[in-house]
Image (tube, rainbow, N blue to C red; front, top):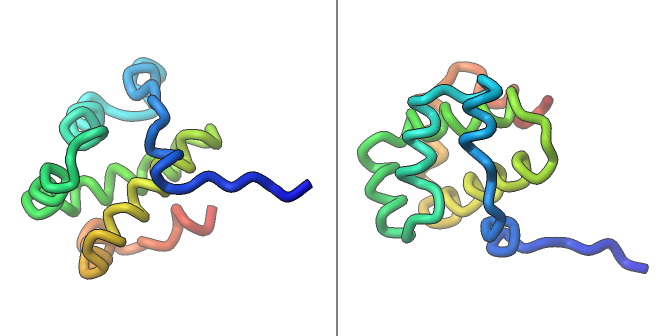
Length: 108
């Protein structure tokens, strides 16, 4: 039996319990606000948010990758990053603006 692979679109259809993560103090109230503004929005809305505050979103995504180990959530955040970079590969520069150790979350 071949392994089942999900597409980015399939992963992004999940509903992630961001409020639960805030209650557990795995994300902050500010992070929750950023997620609510970004998550499940149109591509143009996401692009506008990234243009205005891209380093904050990249920092948020990398913090989640470092602090939350639930597989579905990690896959979801990686899918958000994949979607962000596919839409505009030049956004990789946001990772350099957001953190000096940009590779740590991806190597953990």
